[in-house]
Length: 397
Ligand code: JB8
Image (cartoon, rainbow, N blue to C red; front, side, top):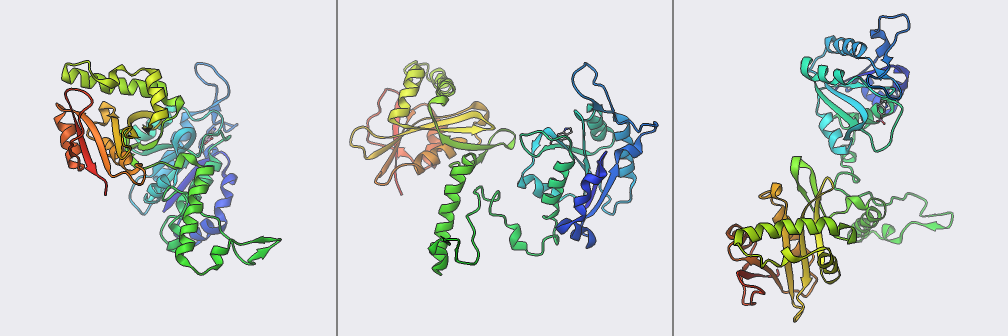
């Protein structure tokens, strides 16, 4: 892989000569070249910045040195024949992640532009895209602010470089525990088995591989819940623009948003049936809030936006049925499979001992009925709670 880095502090990138990445450079797996942006200035002071139009704090990087630096990089010999993917670190970029590192590791050529000051004149991005035909990605290491892109480039080149075939000898060590399957790593220990009065957990010395695997999995779950609860969700799906959907339990703070979503779904049903006798239509903040006490409500969020919900409870009569209700998905995700995912989740969270799952649906909602039939639901003996609806039931596996 070929990597070009443009910076006003080329010495900042010196660590790329060290360790694993340095070895990969020696072995010819990574061809990293660092360029000084000031080499593309023409004044005595080698000026790269100027004051911002419109006013405001700080300085902005001038477009001309950047354009010449990019021309220089593009004109360098490159064996791949491709153009570089231009990566610009910036606090306003898409978040860097293991998934993005994997995608970038497939590129034959990456060019990194390290900004300083308040950042780079916007026309440089447009020029790179429109005139030079480069793919341009603004990428952020995380929600904090650095003084420039250099440290971010060091981190990204290390994360990407180690994924280039041959850079890490042991392919198995590339199957990351953390950030590959969504859970953090389990705690690890080495000899001695007793150190400073602290013993390695006995299960690890037991030789029982099943017990060790179970213990490690539990540790991963506990650790993820404690440190990164945002990673613990019931399931994954894809929402608008490929943004994943997380399913989590609703809490009091979700009530206002949830009430709006439920009203919207109820209104759709009211319009379709020409009847205002849709219970969800008459639920306000108080009813939605008190339902959190008597039932479980699960929310689907995509990039923070509430895109779906479902409510479950043990039937108040004999308590042997699991009632699923208020299954609701925003119109833009109709047909995305999210409704089925919420339904699966509602089923999966039924407690042990539940034998029957039930759903009550408007009898006119033929596509919903078809979908529920496909999910294994059939008309049930249970009487409907209101006219115009049918109760569907499914035996639990
Ligand atoms: C000026 O926090 B960062 C970052 C901050 C920056 C520049 C680049 C990256 C350029 N400030 O990722």
